[in-house]
Amino acid sequence: MAPRGDAPAADSASRTLVLGIDGARRIVRCGPNAAAVLGREPGELIGLAAADLVGEESKAELEGLLEAIAAGQERTAVLTVLRGGPAPGGAGQGGEAGTDAVVTAQPMLGDDEPGGLLYVRVALPRASATRTRG
Image (cartoon, rainbow, N blue to C red):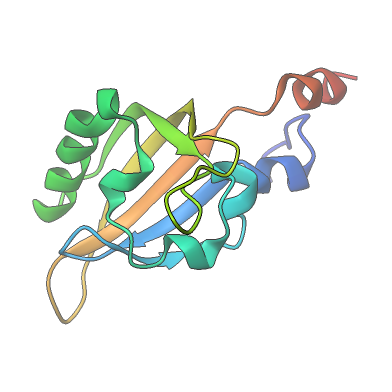
């Protein structure tokens, strides 16, 4: 059995979000920890375009990840993901602050159009990282 790291399992699980993406590049599945990673509830993400999750500076890199899924390839990039999101009526819920995330695109096979998974991993907040060093 591999040794465990210093980070508590709850911290580790809360910083990686798994999203299911369909061939139209829309979010069709979402892990339960969306609020911890993106500051948005899981139900808010279902049906959104994957491009709505990243800042303008990361849209081209996200497009490359989504193209890799369509080609059946795995790919990883560092993207600026948006935390929070627009409230009903277009007003921000505390704004859409960007944070760096390591995003891995993993293709999946199914009966219909190609889709895949996006693993979105954000850094632990500084207070949590300090606390885990012991």
